[in-house]
Image 1 (tube, one colour):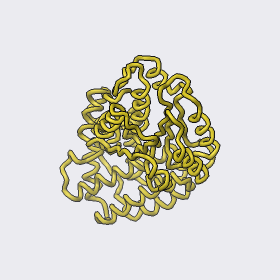
Image 2 (image 1 turned 45 degrees about the vertical axis):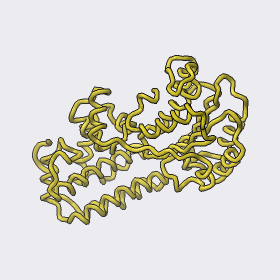
Image 3 (image 1 turned 180 degrees about the vertical axis):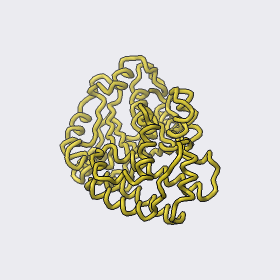
Image 4 (image 1 turned 90 degrees about the vertical axis):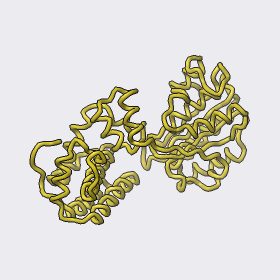
Length: 333
């Protein structure tokens, strides 16, 4: 993917293209934004533009360096990601290895590029090791830190980098992109664009398979109370965030219905009749639903911080029970 293919990030892309054109590159960049907004893809496109054989502010995508960067397979492109073990952190040894690789003279590229994905997950020791690199950056190299939460990054690291913000697309724009460029049917594109909150990468991650059927099973389990049965604890920690997102979208739709919003505002537009039924059958007020939505968001955060899934699910079940809706009847749609 090239700069021209990146959707909705014109300001970020324009900034990087200008820096290349005017030769005003910073030693370090922070790409800041929610997951799925194109930060990592833009980082690879940036690496291509810096090293493309065509030597322009836009890469060609066809030369040797461009193809090697696309496949993330070149010694002059260093990618660091959190370890899958333990607390899933970027550990000090990973930063030490990165510092060594970046210090070497480029093998082929004009500019050695290091991308540190999920940089806000560095251990304190790793963060301090990275700071040394930023204080004395090797010549001919650029560091790109991919960050969701800037407050989790050392201020001394942030102060030495150029921060570039990434924003979600408007839902309608994302819906059109999914339909026109990825062949997603209208109903699925509508749901994905709302569920993904404008994040193209997240929408593409979710689009494969029987998504609508799976999310409707979650909604049916939620409204019947089955979602908190003992067997539901078999749900993996990887799947739980998606289930929580579906729950959040469901209560959001009920809130919108209680406020008299038009059906087109619903995320789960294929369940408009069920939303109407739930809205009239609920025994809690809008403020209670908003508080429950906050608890769902909190549960997602707890899981990201390695809280026990069964414990988090148990606590959330009590919150959901407090705003219970009568079981839904009738067909979906």
